[in-house]
Structure formats: structure tokens, C-alpha cells
Image: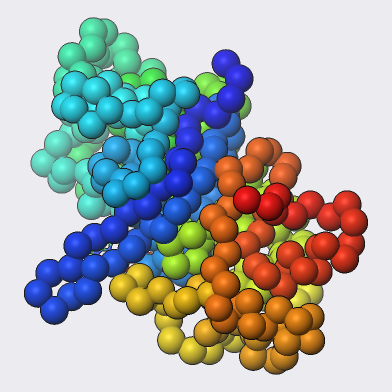
Length: 338
Ligand SMILES: Nc1ncnc2c1ncn2[C@@H]1O[C@H](COP(=O)(O)OP(=O)(O)OP(=O)(O)O)[C@@H](O)[C@H]1O
Ligand SMILES: [Mg+2]
């Protein structure tokens, strides 16, 4: 198959307000393609819409605008269609303790999906999934309960539970957030191995830039409901073009970038600023660099087009200043005009 296995096209997800709570635009126009076997990491600070986008991609949230497509076909939201879709695109939750029922054995936990989807060869599928996830020999784990396992083993059971349905895509929301650093490395190499062995694609949502660096073929940086920069990890880490990405990268150990502390109010999906949505906190606006480049007014008043879906190896950035600078350097990849 050519073309993306999964695409989000102009996806917007708004939550209606209740009582005094204003409505929130959690995802505000996202285009994202994931190729078969590709691992895309999605990073950005708390509340920027990562989980909402992941849930929408899983069909758990219905976009208010735009659509999600799998293998070129828009996904359906009727029960049968969604069930078939969920076999292909599986969720791996962040907290293995919370996503395993303490009263279910490992076997029952992994077999659950096989039963829901009424597939044959339950024993074979469960054994295979556990073994693939490094729980070998699988029979030794069948009758264990979550509390009898280490954190890393529990996470492997969760991944086996997803894998047992032979999906094409895993969506992992903070897959290793609750694990020790040493176990984290193991789980990461497991995900990479599954990609290599099974051609599994993955969307990995994470706060952990080190994880993103280690695992991702492409890195998407989200700010207030939009992807503001996307590219290979090498490019995004070595030469972040969006001031928000620069700020994120600057606090990494050994970053060559002078640490940038973001000031101003944390982003709020109920009140999206006019112009560039990052401008109230943008260090380049604050220190006059945007004014020097003649774009400060645009930063404040002119909204940026939603980034189109990019292909592997392509870098896109949504920033007036970065675009003005790129136009001075012919040949630099930048956003095509839309
Ligand atoms: N069911 C909901 N109803 C109303 N607002 C919601 C709902 N779910 C999320 N939001 C709002 O949408 C925005 C994005 O939330 P989301 O959970 O997607 O962010 P996130 O990037 O996953 O954050 P974190 O890193 O903390 O997990 C937030 O402002 C949040 O308050
Ligand atoms: Mg989240």
C-alpha cells in the first residue's frame, strides 16, 4: 500500500461549555498523515490537545469538523464500523496499573480483545502476543495478576492486549510516563521492534522529549490545538524553527540553545489569542526580533494557515517570523502557501 495508513484532515474538536464554563477548542485544525510503519511522536505542554487528537484518531471522539481516514477511507462512526476500525488502531494507555483490572489474570487481560471481536484461536493469539512483547514463555504469565508483575511487565501486558488483535497502528498516550528510566528504555525498544517486525505504525503522545528523540521518525509539536512544527527529530532538535519548539528544546540537558523561559499565561483552549496563537508568549515578539523582521503586526493580528499534512522528511512550521526568515534563504523548506 502506498499513502498514509492514517490521516487526520482539517480536524477540529470543540467541547461545548457547560454552565459558566466556556466552550473549548481542544483541536483547532490538524492535518497529520502517518505512513505504514512510521512512528510519529506528538509533543507539547499540558492542555494543548494531544489526548483529544489521539482520542479523535481512535474514533473515541468525533471531530466537529474534518475527518479521520484509515487506509484512505474516512472512518465510520456506527457501532459496527467503529468496532472494525478499533481492531486496526489500538490504544495503549499511559498508566499500566490503571488500565489493567487487578482481578483479571494476564491471560484474561490479553484475551479480552479476542473475545470482544469474536476471533478464533484465542490461546494461540494470546501466547503469541505475550511472547512478542517479551513475556516468555507466555504460559508462565497466564495466571499471574497485575500486582505480581513489575511495572515494565504490566506495560508489556497492556501492549500485548493491543497487539493480540493484530492492529496496523498503535496510539500510545504517555506510554512510559509512570515507568522507571531503565524500564522505559526496554519498552521503547519493544515498540521499535514491533515496528520492524510487524510494520506497526504508532502515534506516541508524550511530554518526554528524550523519548520522542529516541523513538520517532517524525516529531510533531502541538501548541493550543494546532501542530506548529513538524519534521524529523534530527531537524526539530538541531534546528527548531518555531520559537515555541525552541523553548521546549532549550530546556533539554546539553541543548546548545540558551534556556528560554516562557512567560505569560499558560494556553487556554477556551480563549485562543488572535493572530499567531503563540504571540502573547513568544520570546521573539517580546525581544523585538519579530519587529526587526517586520512581522510583529502580523504576529499580533494575522492568523496562520493550518499546516498541511507533511510527508516523511519534510519540515513544516507555522510562524510568521520563521516564514519571513525562510523566504530570505532560498531552498529552505518551509510552508507552501495555502
Ligand atoms: N471532555 C472535555 N470537555 C471539555 N473540555 C475538554 C474535554 N477534554 C479536554 N478538554 C479541554 O481540551 C483541552 C485539551 O485537553 P487534552 O486533554 O487534549 O490536552 P493534553 O495535551 O492531552 O494535556 P496533558 O498533557 O495534560 O495530558 C484542554 O483545555 C482541556 O481542558
Ligand atoms: Mg493528555
